Length: 236
Image (cartoon, rainbow, N blue to C red; front, top):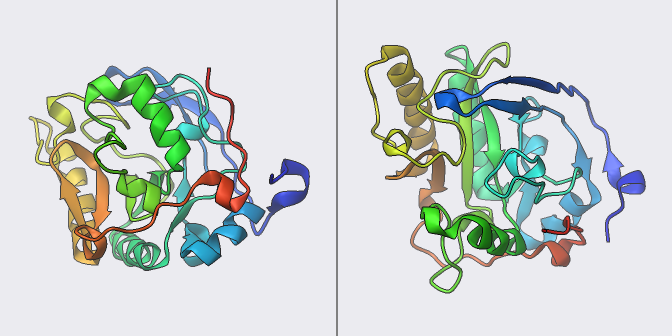
């Protein structure tokens, strides 16, 4: 298993941990951004997954499942969780980031590759919400690294106001939600246009979720945490 003390290769560190009000009455949430590559990320290369920060060194990463601020109310990812996507998907994300940078914005990643082991835990903790695909039907595209959950930040890394926070299921979660706040509508449209032009497609129920359109109708292999030597927290 990958160990924290010998697996982390710091290529840059811009760690920021604060607690700020979330969107839509979600209370306080943790904001984190750290650029760090792990041995597990290196091991994932042979499965076609690459650490996003190799292609987008300036991307903000705030993996929700590495914190207690998620539907399970406990970390499901380890502190050294690599931020992985299928290489082709990561390249598309880099295009979206470039387009947003030109407009004074950028991407913050909430989730990328998701170990199938974690998908099972999410089904156990929040399957009734309808947000998590049942592996008995099909695996989430997150498990193959061909889907990503993102939000929008400005050039200073300040998260923009959007309809909801991550994994908040309501009428406001729909990708076509605009509401009566033009600022929210503009931010959502800015993110959606950049992502779809880069090669992603949206789903009805989650404005933050984008699938790589190239692989949407294909059966991509899933990659387990154990296959890349990643030790996951014990789920209680």
